[in-house]
Image 1 (cartoon, rainbow, N blue to C red):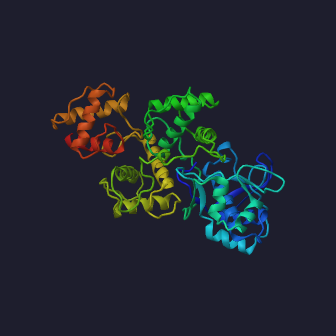
Image 2 (spheres, one colour):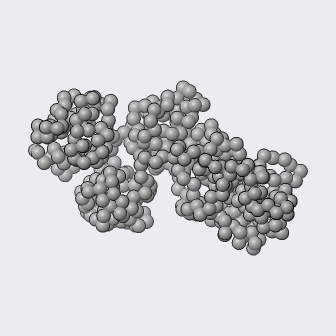
Image 3 (tube, rainbow, N blue to C red):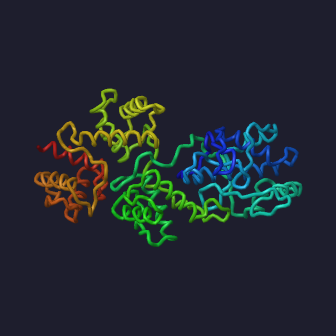
Length: 446
């Protein structure tokens, strides 16, 4: 499931019911809508009726894509051509000229419920000899002849609390699965989105523990929730969110919220992850840039084709050059913009490095790839405690800590004091930025 709705460049249609062995075809999204509209409505209808119907057809298809309705169930297509399930698509069907022009005008618009973000599941039927919830295609002609405009026609069927969103972005439809398994210690939008979904699922399945703060940090509580979800739904209960668990969460979330139904509960803006920046570009600044620069700097130590960067929190020309070089080497569009694909590719590359050689050029351990915070234990906690203990002998505002591998209150206070002194957000969480700063400060005193 996407975070924000978009218009896909292409859509893959299964030419039959979902479980049939019919072939798939992939066509551009506007061409798909033109085909559906030319098969379901008549070009001689009043333009207001045509537009109202096409808005509904667009929103219906976008809902299938947004919820990954079929792909979350393991299918390799976005929608079917069966009217028992979806909309009428006829491979090779002729398209009417006036319908084509209307689609070109509004293909990047869709219907949504006010207060919700997802495209509304705009259920409809022909209205001839059948009755259904939602829009009745033939009856839209009468409403148009009575002088109703497209928006008023849609309100007549779907309620006054709808909006028509125009100018939605067009982009390649990539799977929502991050491409790498999420596990304890990971951070980011994908983690937060998964936490929000699990919390909503837990309302229907109270045996799944809720995550008090869906903050995008994969901690022990999130692991417990994932494991219980996996147990409830017959998955390997390893607490790791791989492809199967990710899409099972997506499917159950859509189901409990009825996102693929006309009376959808809806997804409020507050449910959309906001804590972590997804797209990073030249001119940006902040901790997210410092994390990016840290990963790139480590990668550059093992790849002479990637220029090194300074970790300064500024997306400067040096950083852009390194990003473009990395993208070029990894078959990505070398635009210098770090979107989801580029970020995951960089993180995967970094993970591969630390798996093969967890020690950096300075002889100190590299960031292990997962955040450390209050309650954490183990060797990585012991390492930062050792660094803090040495630093406290020089910086009197950093309290000394016992090197015992337990991230308790004393370690939390020391981390926050270190962060405060070195200009890092004093949240007590040791991610890539704090780890790198600790290692650098410790290295300077050796």
